Amino acid sequence: MAHHRIFRILAVAAVVAPTAFLAAPATAADGVAKIGVFLPLTGENAENGQQIRKAVELYVNEYNQQKHAHKIELLVRDDRGEPKTATNIAREFAQDKDLIAAVGSFTSTAAMAAAPILDKAGIPQISPTSSHPDFTGLAKYAFRGTPTQSIEADRIADYVADKLGSKTAAIVYRQDDWGNSAAKVFRKSFEAKGGTIVAAEAVAPDTRDLRTLVTVLKEKNPDSVYVALHYASAAVLAQRMKAAGWNPKVITSTALYTHQLVELAGNDAVENWHVPAFFFAESKEPVVQNFVAAYKKAYDQTPNAFGAVGYDSIAMIGTALDDVPGSGTEGRKALGDKLFEVQVRGTTGQMKFDANGDIDKTITWLEIKGGKFVQAP
Image 1 (cartoon, one colour):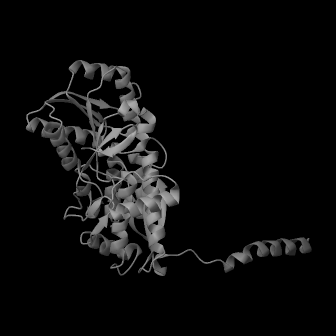
Image 2: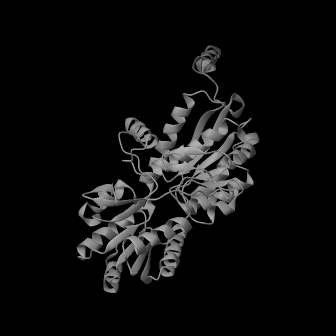
Image 3: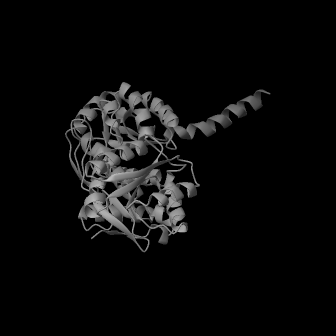
């Protein structure tokens, strides 16, 4: 029995001993800046969440190959775009003493749910895409990579009234914080320009039968329809409108500059739709061309606007990190303060946070022609 016992101990030692030669995991003390990323990697908004994840990882790979004060390590989590899940992830991040910043989420509701928890821990948070006006007011170091709905929907209303000459409009919006905000701002701005809103219809995130809604809107006969939905619901709306033989002018939010919309709806269903964007993959700007080329090389696909703003958002953190003396808990305040100062010429335009953590950018107007996004005349 003694011989058997000695053999078992030696066998375990033979398995365990080689691990002593492996490098220990890097920690904040080793000059590593750990950044938490929480996005919808599965579920309704998985395509957009994955675009942001890929772009963030692309930037980090590039950054870590260069000489910087820190190396970046990512901790990636899937929040499915759900506030409750985002809250749990934020608690996990808050308890990680090595974590210096957080990027997320994609949806305003998830980003806003996480913000107070991250704020209590002093963790700077950049949501690449949260456009709800209230988001940055929830925390000292809450930043956004895209303009608020107050800015975006106001400019869309200008386009509908002035460029398209519409006197009446209907609104179809997602039934959540983001959609409610978009609808409210568009209505206020369009009516201020003398326009009339003839209908405003909310769509629950999981709704897939929009035949009744389309029938109601068609009877109202608006000049234009403003669509503030995510791509899955918008594709269903487009198909139902086509089936009903109804072809009004359709103007969307920036959320619908994604090829997933065209793929799900079909080319004909979204032909001539007007889509605003803060990023255009066909731009001749060198910074855009370089990003698109690198993204295609890494992932064999073209980045959408969400991938682009994800890249720009992590670039703000990377730029600020060089002037942050520590990482982990001790570096959080220094990083948060520095994020108000840095500027980056990004793929989506100039990145510079104001005193509230908000940002402004120029809209590029696109149209869908033959299944492709092209610049509007």
